[in-house]
Image 1 (spheres, one colour):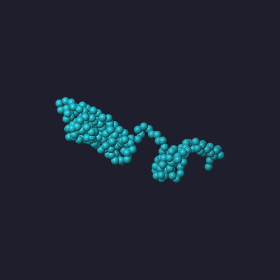
Image 2: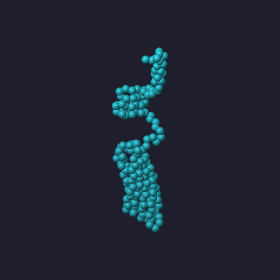
Image 3: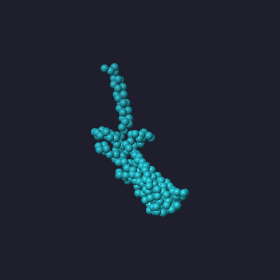
Image 4: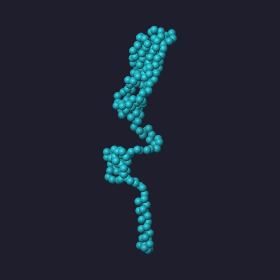
Length: 212
């Protein structure tokens, strides 16, 4: 038994203090806890199935999903190893030799780059070089790269020297969007100022960075 009535008064005051401190604490302030899980007061999504809505956050007690809006993280908190293929890279290198180049532009060599599943856009860079020998002792060789049907700038190179041979190089970059799989092409295209340029060869070196 307590020694006197003051002990009861002290205990009551101590309990009142603890209750006041618990009420003042902001643990999970403005959050709602129910059978589905824990959500902020302004959460307008759903926990099961998990949908973000437009504001607030939620932690599902049934599916284990965390649903957030406007998530802010410390820089470099998530490393590349924690992500699922956010970027994919493909390269293409090749050439075709022993060609005849005429007045009309023609594709000398093409590389096909496969588009990884789940990626919708590509940053493509293509570099080409073309060489040939003039049958008339002069004239110009005209070349340009082509990325998935789009032509790059045409470069002209004059033939000269005892063999009347010449070569030229050109490059092109392109952003391609709206992809749904399949592949894209990169090509070397050439024409000449006169017919019958021989010993033609077309080289293509390209890479594509695919993004979701």
